[in-house]
Length: 465
Ligand code: FRU
Image (cartoon, rainbow, N blue to C red; front, side):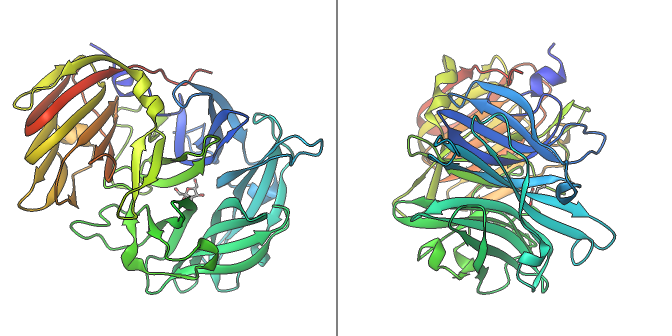
């Protein structure tokens, strides 16, 4: 019998060995090495202050745990080094080498309601020439530098270069409770001037967190995480959302977005604060947090030493409909080991909870079960795909999610300990969830008509120190 810790610890999803993780931060590839920073609270479950933890990899599958990268240490980040991004500047170092710039929000709390009063958000930068040691902190923007109609919530700088200039998008909450993105511009990526904002035509949540911009196929997509959208049966089912607006114009020409065009990036229970970056090979890669702030469900049922994980790196492309597709980077395929057929009428018993299950050429309705506890069902008549827990022990408060879907053709299910990512129709949609199975083997039940159904045992190992 394996322990809960062994069964639930992922092999190819990034999770801290100890402590807390939330948003992915500072995603980049610098001198060939992929860097994934993340919101970390190493002292969790004793509440401490958030900073940036650091994983690095040459291949997106074997990761090194580099410990803490940025922790609160100055008055301007006294209560947390919050989320932010990376900018690689070729030849930007004083000696002519390349420079990695990391931007984050220094959070400071004092007496007040922490929305309209009692909080400072400072945008701060550190630099690095090797990706592992970081400079002194430099405070770039302070509360007095933001538009006067904002609350104290202004954070999560996403910085990029465009046409020889630098731009920073900040997530913000306006005093009248409207989510906004505030845009700054700079010639040197150090001195910033406010150039405008992006807002929705009609109210669309009170706060937008973690902005990111994806430029693909000649089009810009503005990624944001709106808070405060009312849950409906087939959309916005999570407490907070993570999605994007396909922009009719370039992001720099955009001042208003049509909220009706907002597309959710994931339909599962556990997905938030995604960040995208372009790697040295030109791929757009997105990683999300497999968690949900303030959710009424737990991710540490028996007191695991670690809390939360990230999604696998997903390659983002554009479909013929102009919408984004997400698919595990091909490096994940390299972890596939022993292959086993899955019977479309029965299913299969897999040796453990680390598997890559692929169903292709699906016709009509489908029922897929994992351990009899987590079910996926598609009804062509209803035009709905549902993911539902049938067992509270495995669900830990998660219930059911529904998404509109006309036709189901393909499914790919990554099971990795307590992490499950379900890719629909080659990445047209994704549903991510945590779950807490108790069996040693993974029982897959399947009732479907499909041309091909098979599964691979997945290798991989937790990040090494
Ligand atoms: C999103 C978020 C960010 C913030 C960070 C703090 O989950 O609230 O807006 O920077 O988490 O950990």
